[in-house]
Length: 263
Image 1 (cartoon, rainbow, N blue to C red):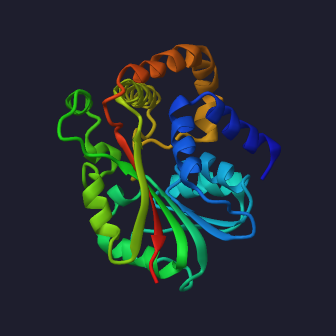
Image 2: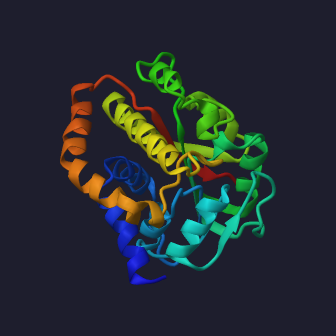
């Protein structure tokens, strides 16, 4: 990995309040990884993969869309696999820790995939799963759908999970330890605006507006004007997301769970 590739990824992270929220939620649950064999799945364009590796450990990565796999590989090198939600290309009990980021909602057989996670994770190992939370009602989702940012556009085969449903999905193999939510209404509105802006920009240039993983911002996007726009808008975005603090009794639109491999 070259310094230029790493610098664009870290530059994007430092200007993305949403990615900062996601990594803070993951790292807040993640146990020390130094000296461990670890796997991250679904880490989008590789920024999360890169940051996870900074905590130590021997990491492998995997994702669904070829664009995402290519972007992750360009950032972290090493073992980066393309997977489709079926059998994982890893040995039984290979990993001490597995982090799954925005992936279960994209695959047909999430229960079968949970069994695969149980197979590759050693007994006592840690699993972290990050998914969209399916709210009982929403102020934002009707707007998203009205402007074309549907589940289908995001590559979602299901709209999300509730805490009890995700726990039941993992129950045969994992014992839940802790769960929480993040990304409240103002953050979700910002995510909607950013995705819609990305679609408009891609349509204007004749580019692909979505992948099997929704939007995947690459180094090419960053160098083609994305950096300047994000730099200019970052102070406003940071202030906007701060408004989530005014909603103390609202749960976030993202659900994250830490669990322990049974037996």
